[in-house]
Structures are given as structure tokens and as C-alpha cells.
Image 1 (cartoon, rainbow, N blue to C red):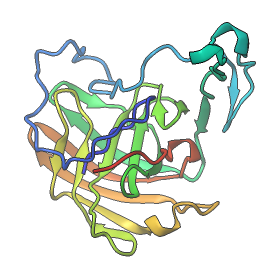
Image 2: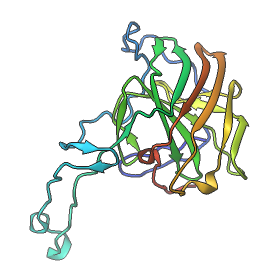
Image 3: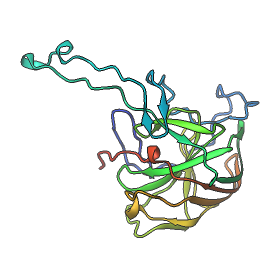
Image 4: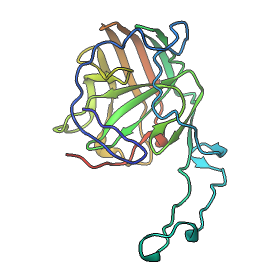
Length: 231
């Protein structure tokens, strides 16, 4: 089921609808090796320099006196959101060829996290970059996202054949078959300090999309999103 996380932390937890393949008239350059990369959260990042999992930029503090609230009470605007990094890992093994109507999608590197809005579901991020910038669960680096379709009645670990959906322009594209999680990922252990590798196999050829191969990628703490209001 789909759950959006925005910087305002709003969320709508409605099941995804199978969408048509993305409009080939989109402005994406078909010759680009990073075609169909998800541009979610591509707004200019805060002006800071970061290291893995820690922001080293000096976020500018705002004086309380600059923003008086009601009845003269000052409001603390707080610091800008911290940017975290997911770094490449020797543990990852990616042998996946992924392509859509506009061409090939870069799958050189990958990470996974828990999408924790409403229920805990794994989601996978693939990119051509050896590291990605993330803030509040939003990936700032161009990427392609694959979500395990969660179930309100999920009990125990995710494992075996599972429906997934691609986060693509024009709407989510659901694949009911063609993906298998090879190693268990337990949502009840989502808060543990150490998470296992995401190991999955793809055999998809439908709706103008082809995904063939496998991925083994590490967990990235920055991809664990915050809870949100659910209906």
C-alpha cells in the first residue's frame, strides 16, 4: 500500500492503483542511462557538508526574538533538517538489468530501509551514485525506488514472492508477480541496531518494464522514515 512522506510529514495510506506505463512524451531524455530516475525530493539541499549519518554543516540558528508568535510569545524556528549519507558497501552485490519505456535505469548501487508510515514495509533505492543524500526519509539524490507492497495483516517476516511497486512518473506501477525476497526482513525488528541485507530476485517483463536479475544491498539508517498519521 502506498504511503507518502513529505517534509511536512503528511501521509495518505491508500492502496496503490495499477497505473499505465509512464507517458513516453515526458521530458526525460531517452538516451540518458539514468532514465526514469525518481526525482522525489530534488529541492536544493541545505547548505551543509555531511558525513555518513551525521551532518557536519553549521546549521544557522534563528533567534527567538525574530519570530514573535501570538500574544508576543516568540516561536523557535529550529535548525534546518540534517542531511545524512548512505555510502557504498562491499557487501552489496547487484546484478540487475532494469529498463522502462524511456530506457535503462541505473542500478550500480543500492540500499534499503523501513518505510514506517502506517506499517513497516521495506523499500529499495537504486542509483548510479556511490552515495546518496537523505533528509527526513527523503532521498535528494536522483534514484529509482522499489517498494514492497505491505499488508495491514502482515505477521512475521517478509519473505518469498511478494507484490512490489515502482515509484515512477505518472503513477505507481504495481507488479503482483515477478519479485521474490530471498532472505527474511522482519518488520517487528525494524528498530534493532543492526539490520540484515536486502536480498531479492526480479523476473518482471510487463507494462513496458523489464527487471531481470538480483540485488543484495545493505540497510541504510537514513532511509528509515518517520511514522505518520494513518487512516
